Image 1 (tube, helix red, strand yellow):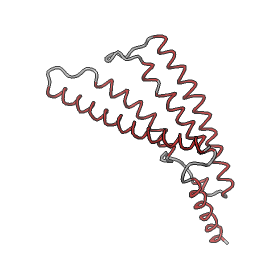
Image 2 (cartoon, helix red, strand yellow; image 1 turned 180 degrees about the vertical axis):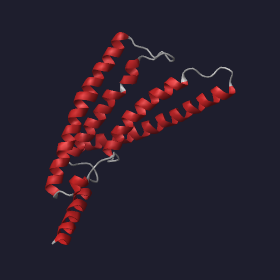
Image 3 (tube, one colour; image 1 turned 45 degrees about the vertical axis):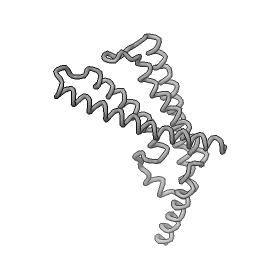
Image 4 (cartoon, helix red, strand yellow; image 1 turned 60 degrees about the vertical axis):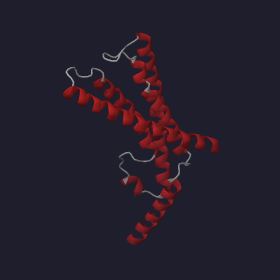
Length: 179
C-alpha cells in the first residue's frame, strides 16, 4: 500500500502543477483575446474556443484535486454529530459512492464519449481540434477521483487520523457538556 500512496502523492503533485500551467495558459489566452479585440482590426478567432476547452479541463481536473484535499463544499453537520465509529462508516460509504460514480459515469461514460468523438471525427469549429481530446478530461478526472477515493477509503490520506482524533475529542467534549 505504501507504493500506492507514494504514487498517488506524486500524481497529486503533478496534477497541481498541471493546473497551474492550465490556469496560466487561460490567463494568457483571455488576455490575448482582449488585446486583439480592442487593438487589432481583426480579432483572434480561436481564443474563445481555447478558453472554453481550458475551462473544461481546469474544472474537471481541479474538482479531483479539490476532492483529495477536502476543499469541496460539504454538509458535515450530520457527520460531526455522530460518534467516531458512525462517522467513519458514513465517510467510507461516501467514498464508495464517489468511487462508483467515478468508475461508472466519468471513466466508463467519459471513455465512451471520447471513443465516439474520435470515431465520428468530430472537430471544433475554430481550432479544428478533435473533440475526443477535449472530452478526455472526463475519464482522466474519473481515474483521479477513483485513486483519491481508494486512498481515502483505506484511511491513508494524510490528515484523516488527525481529523478523526479531533472529531472524537470534540464528540466527547460535547457529551460531557450535555451531562
